[in-house]
Image 1: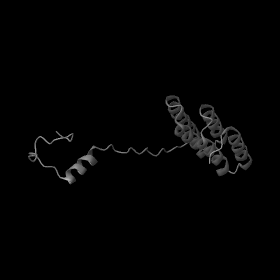
Image 2: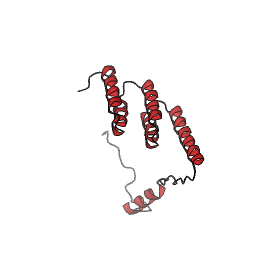
Image 3: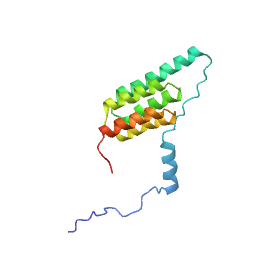
Image 4: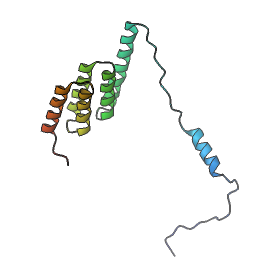
Length: 137
């Protein structure tokens, strides 16, 4: 006896399915990508409320998966887009408390500073990274 699997029934299936049908069914079963609606803000109070809601959403994501660096980076990027640089720095510093040995996190932090022309701050971030991280070739 050989160890190969044996086919028990070699007769054709009673219902034949084409590759086109399989692809069509797969496309129908895929989840639809939900696009966030565009938020139209009319006054300062509404803007502050929107920012507060988004920050709560980011904080909840961080609380749920604290070690996931993408959540931290998205949150800092959101603050940067709203020109809240101190908040963005605070987010990165909190992320570094969670995972200080992540070179990607240090690079994103330095890039934030460089993008917004805070060159001395970027130098400081990179100096701290060089002191804390082992050499990577």
